Image 1: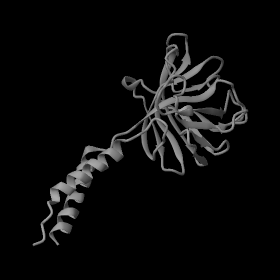
Image 2: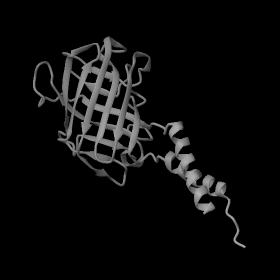
Image 3: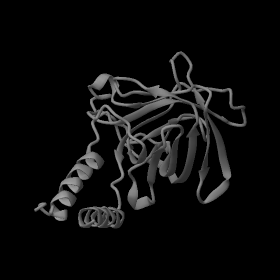
Image 4: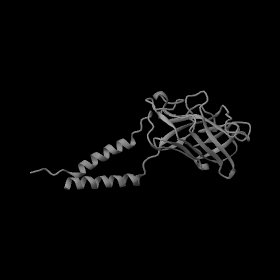
Length: 230
């Protein structure tokens, strides 16, 4: 007599494998999906902390944008589908007054890179120098808007995302992004570049919603029960 298999046994085994696959996110890799972005990874960075710096954007001085000021409405994300990489959301900041911002405000940021050279063995994603375009806008003053364009300068690419040489970037052991920008400065054109104009952030995967995981689990369970019953 043929022994009937226990469908629950296979379901739980498959669920364990799936959970391991979904949760696995080695520091050196960049998987497709959504990431929450956080500030500059260097532990020695002085306040106000930031994930984007655009000096001279609103006139002379240091201008930075805080990705972690959740109480002020900041929430920055990175989406990667294997072909395009998008950095988007809101950040809090403006003119850096030394230890705090001078008249800070909430900014909307949206930039897309369309040329992904590839993810190297060390996990660094090389983003094409001429492929990035975007915009930064003051949320409460939409007329205050600046175009953003990628810039490589003396570097091989405009943006790198991953874990530098598998040992972290600026002391951060995990996924970070760093790269350079051009933008309209004081009525100038997009070809202008200020040395301190760059992204510098860390990235954490956004977990799969619990409801979606339960739906997937239920579907897999039905599939295995049907197969074992047939």
